[in-house]
Amino acid sequence: MLIVIDGPAGAGKTTVSRALAERLGYKYIDTGALYRGVAYEILARGIDPDDQDGLSLLLTNLDLRFERTAEGMRLFSSGTDITDYIRTPQITMLASAASAKPVVRQALLDLQRGMGKQKAAVFEGRDMGTVVFPDADVKFFLTADLKVRAMRRFEELGRTSSQSLEQVENDMQIRDSDDSSREASPLKPAEDAIQVDSTDKTVEVVVDEMLDIVQAAAGR
Image 1 (cartoon, rainbow, N blue to C red):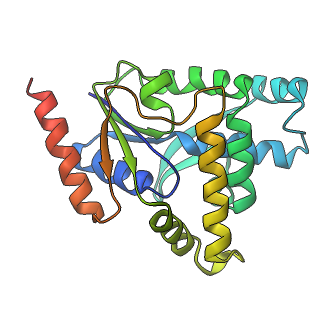
Image 2: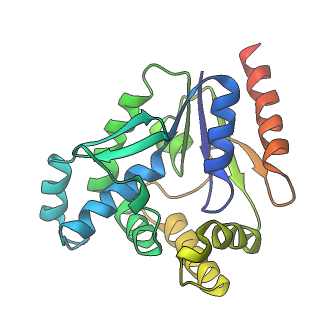
Image 3: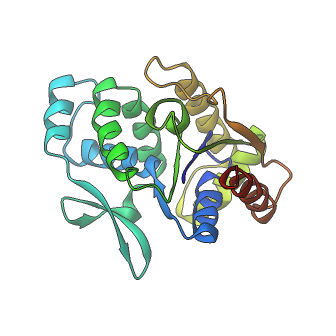
């Protein structure tokens, strides 16, 4: 089956998607990392995010791929492992801005659909159920209260970040607004998505809920 999990930042998509994929023996694909990979290359090459020609040239020669290593699934760009460099606040905000560009979304749309052809995968993102895989077997939309999401992200960043909790929450609120209001593939639940609120739930409870739904769908 092909399973997609959409939702805003900090809702727990990465942890839940990875755990669900592991329980099912499926591949886990973090599509947000692909946009972060694009943002990383934009920053590394000094490209203006509003420069359509510059973006088009970058995307034409872009070589992003996931590889399974001893450390788990890692993201490589032109053969270089960039996994540890794409989780900074700067990359996060740039990835959100880049994802609003139709030229970026189209380039990654083809890449993601290619990855999903063999199914047996859990795709995590923001428009998986609405745009990338509208015919996915099971669609989830995972969310949580903003303050809870901000605290999760703040704890995730830990001492490696100079951001305060208030700054993290403010950035997240801005990103929520940007992602939801953009013209290209706005963040919203698919009409047939099953919405799951993780505010007061542990990862285990959320994964168990989703697993029950997936198993019920498989038995139809």
